[in-house]
Image (cartoon, rainbow, N blue to C red; front, side):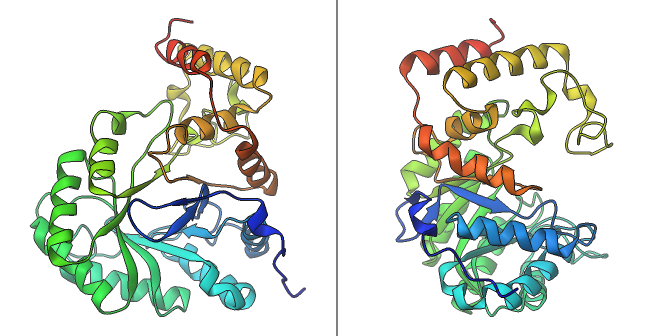
Length: 332
């Protein structure tokens, strides 16, 4: 069936300006980290992408190594893009990354100029596009000079292979230095992608202040802590859950009884707010407008509906914020 996008899609989403740039991102972005590789039926991936766009989700986030196997998420996305979304390419933000192991040998990892440029060329071929909207360095490289990595990113933009540059997983001090180098080169950093949730709050110490000072946007990945901040584990670990599957992204050892007590307390507050726990957790990450967008994964259309439904109740009273802080300190 030929796909026709929902004409009312932009009425369903809120868009936030990304730092000091002219670009706006949807409050909810869709990550293709899971559920878009060759182990997933292509038609399931297609339906997720179609439904996301119909909800006003315009930003699809990939990386060179997403799959499994590595590269397959980009290949599958590229096929769906060509078959379904070409009429709307200019309404999409497509992002990808390089920085983790992608191929054998000394040139398939980290942050050298050779790796970054070769990796993006491969990504463009897999997706069948001439450029991506955002290209990220996926993690800092402890051995390559930071200036070499940033000059490669600047070169990529000047070649027209990416419109904007982003950083991911950079700690505050390294992010500040990288942002300053990019500014000196004339290619400002658009966005930083850190891991951030109620259970992972390292960005609050310094990073968010650095980004705000420098006019750089932010997009939080794993805002649901790998599924911990959902109603999936309120009564233990279901046999068909990610935690029970041997996933390296969530294992049973993380779901201690102490953690489950916290999750249940948070869920009780979410219920009083008239929300699911997952919705409250997403709203909490977006609560103070220092985060531009939250990056979710989805295996079911209902998860997309839940995430976008959060926008109807994304603000917190002072009492609710205080209660959440108390719960997270383990006092309840």
